[in-house]
Each structure stands twice: as structure tokens, then as C-alpha cells.
Length: 89
Image (cartoon, rainbow, N blue to C red):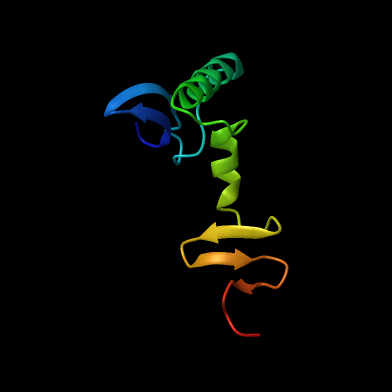
């Protein structure tokens, strides 16, 4: 897809939203994006996800600047203290 969001169940694509511009953006209309995101969330719900807006949650989870705890490529970060969880003071 060149970047984007996808819901896959047992190897089959249930819903997707392509984000071909740097893997983060699309040139689709707002209406199209809203519709595709709704399809993604419904597909995630059918697979048992009970988190509201799960794709938004995942998108923000990796941002280490938003408090309190965030997951990065280095591990779990305590944003308030500015260090990895488990690091000595």
C-alpha cells in the first residue's frame, strides 16, 4: 500500500486505509478517509477489539512526547522523568 492502516483476519484483508504520502498522509477526500477509518474500526471490533478508535491509539502510542508512558524502539519510556522505565536514576 505504500504505508497505511490495515485490519487482517486470518490472512485476509478486512479493511484498509492507504497512506501513500510518506506513509503518513493521503490525497483522498476527508469523506473517503472517514469512511475507510470507520470500516477499519468496525473490522477491528468484529475481531474482538473493544478499544474506541484503536488505530488512533496505536498512532499516538509511539509518540514519546505525550505523557505518561510511551513505547518506542528503545523500550517503555517514562516521559515525565525523561528516561526508560527500569533505568536507574
